[in-house]
Length: 309
Length: 253
Image (tube, rainbow over all chains, first blue to last red):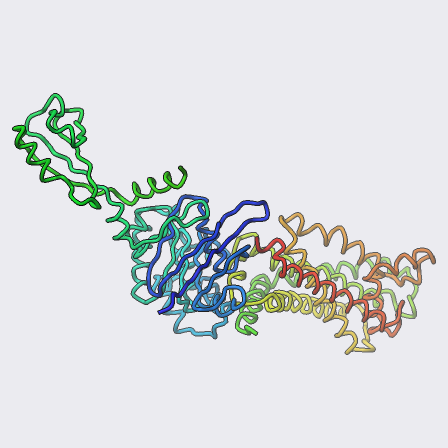
């Protein structure tokens, strides 16, 4: 199956000379959730804006559903729903009117049943006659998503859907995205919260300074980049790491009660078996052991630094 | 053509008008009535007929034009400026529509509002003076063309403006003087010859002249010239708007 979004060497240099996109290439499969992960100013919003027609690209090309975003903009844009980062709604308008407006704007004939279904899906039906300014921040975000979905797009762009929202609302938003995934909509979301990409995305594209550093399945990324640590709690404190264990590069905690060992799951062997045997040979009694996997956050920070170096 | 989109923009803009119907209609009606009291009754009673028409009736076309032009510009400029100001313009820019459809929606709505206001003023004027319209079709043509061309002009101002002050600037600095000096309340034949010549550089003179001709059958310049002038103005506005959308001036970085 051809990718639903295909980006080839897309470039955007603003009039001031700032290169926001330095040749981005990306393919997105239908039905997946991909997270564009990167720090502020990485080019995430510029990429989305360019694909949606808000910003004009200065080089390269892109297709949505097989339609070029410039020459076939009508068909390409009709397939796209966009939820912007900032809440941009006319404060004096009624919820239902603003949603109906969006549907019309995207060339779709009036469909009251569909509008009702979308509004109910986002618990907005009871608020349909409320003015936008009367709604809470969370409700306004729901209205934005309802507007983007009411013309039945196949690709949904969510630009920082949870920037500046509280924890509860974030969980709420994740649930909404999960619900959308089941409806078969392809979702491209930008975020600078690794936790968010980790929680909802199938694939992650790391973007920094206008370039895509890598695109990979979330699980594979975690596994490939996954450094793990093993913490060994000792029954009796030791004064120093025994010489026989010097090869393992162990760290002794301040209270001298535990040792930390770093290993790489990518390696041939982790060395854990030999380490534990060596500990036993030294006569050190163990009270507990635990392993922790490095989070995407650590992977991500490491990559950005590598990119900068 | 994306007709649902045109309809959506048009309806949305008209809804704003009807939401503030009282304000939208009341202010032109009140200001027109004030003009009649001041110019028509107080001052007009001391002015003899102009071109065989009582002064009270003579100023009716000028009053309509003044309101229609101002309203067309302010409605159209606000209509496109407001989405820019509150960032909802992103939706228009990301929709599967072209510039022509956007313009039809916004300008069509602004022109409709201006036309309605013009008709309301004409009706209000009937309470103060007797008016006979000699060329109703021509009158309506001039009125509609004025609504359209000044709405197009307002649309350009709305795109150009970067703050509310700029939005008011052009109407205040350019349009109001041109309308007042364009023969809205007098015939330019009443001016000294030198000023008559200068007046011919004011495009609004041609509009006013043609519009007044449709009422009273008398014009300062020929009617054909008036029509050409307004067609020319409309074409320039359309050209500028076409350029705006082609280059993305102030709407597409």
